[in-house]
Image (cartoon, rainbow, N blue to C red; front, top):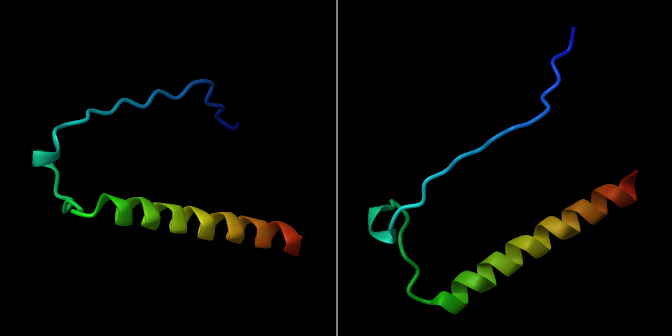
Length: 53
């Protein structure tokens, strides 16, 4: 008998930047450019998968 999940709750806590393990990027423009490039790559991959079907 399959289990059906009607509602899923996700709770997170956000802390200061000083408590993270991530290295801060000094060049904020480069950070947004990297994010945009990653998004474009993912969009093109999705479009390619749709075209293969």
